[in-house]
Length: 300
Ligand code: SF4
Ligand code: SF4
Image (tube, rainbow, N blue to C red; front, side, top):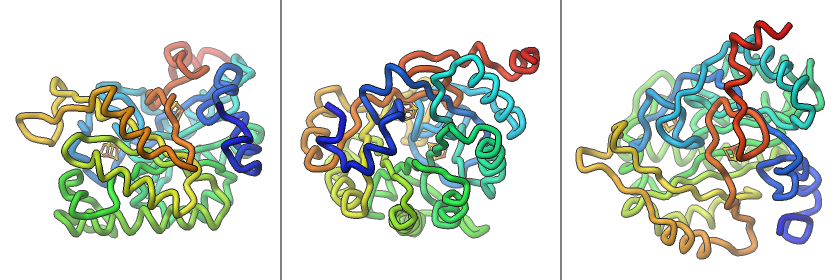
């Protein structure tokens, strides 16, 4: 079970009230995501841009996009209704740090002033992360999730057709090499800054399934405290960039076999729900529809 026995005490101290990280906490503490980051700076082959970032969410979900001010209002309204609210995260619907991270930082800055007891976290593909680690530290972010699907650009070129970096578009193996270097650098910088790093990986059969064992080793080496291996949820109806034949997701048995192979002295997360970018409430419940921007406006 979760707890001090399988986590360093200083890590446990930070995550024990976090519903995603502690099996016990997820019955008592609530989390919410605010969808303030619509843009993205890379293309994943399994993503359909019309929906939430598939690095964090189930496919086919469209979250209500908010401005930073609307998001802050919504968090304060939710906190008043749900006193167990302990964590606010930004997980899209695109990448939380793309396009200068403007809305993300603005939201966090306001929340750290207005609701200092609420923990703040974000998810990112990592491309822009090295540019923001110091800024995130100054804003008191204590958890970052990076989606890392490869540590070898040869593998990466089958997952990422392009990235947009330093005002330039990169394709092919060069795109994956840059993404990989930025992800590793970002992870190391988080470690140095004392910000907890969780890694998400999407298991794509025939593309990176066996390779995720290498990913697990490399992220462990760089201090990630938790690894969450998620299944690709095949989404033929909504279309992705894997080609006309589509790309299947792993079976439950394949996923479990890989997770078992990766389970060593590093903790694996097995209860992530791949929540919507605007999820609200206890894990496994979603009260987002009670707190749309329109309803929040009517609350005060
Ligand atoms: Fe889509 Fe997320 Fe990948 Fe961007 S990082 S392309 S939003 S899955
Ligand atoms: Fe927690 Fe996973 Fe949901 Fe994020 S997506 S809030 S880590 S359960």
